[in-house]
Length: 255
Image (cartoon, rainbow, N blue to C red; front, side, top):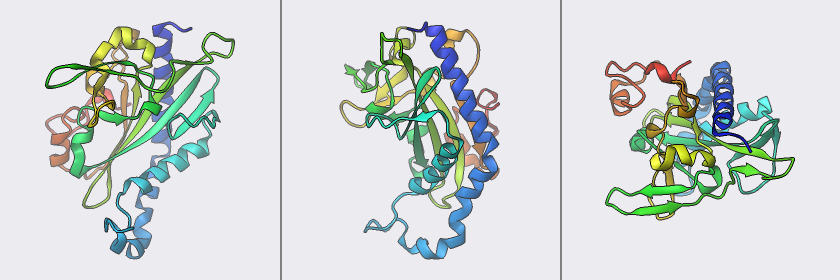
């Protein structure tokens, strides 16, 4: 069993690895996002029809990032069905990595928190609801796999969050986030969790636990790997957690 400090060291280690990888493949990623334009006339009339047509840009954007990550072959993929979309083993951990795509029409879904599934995190704790009352949240992932055995490894959770423009379909921002392992509940307590839209569902309240606090440094749990050079002031104003009043990305979220 690891100490809380050791867990945060691993979370920071792999957050940085994913961030630097996303920066390394930025050109290929943006080229992939733009590839839809080559054949726009073949799909544009189907987009958003709600009648068997394409309803979300998320599918295409996530496909590009998944293909780049899979091509890098981080660790050994694992077939466990109770997991994030990407689940693999590395020498010192099991890692869950999930994509979250938000469109600007629903930008509130990523201003200060993001939805997380029970199969994507190990953080059990209390959710304090706005109207009062407390709901206990229990995820499906363990804090450790093979706990108590010589094969024991900690479970880590990461999210790649893609913001795309509802009108132009351009990608406006790509970020990578580290959600604390469940063992760290003794430190972060209920700050990590917010109520989801339905009972029993939760959101990762990253705005309230955006630093690796146990490490005692100012290192952020969130890194932004890409911002559209033409992102509008209207969008950055709504994302005041990430951007300052001049529309510049706050320094703690960049390299």
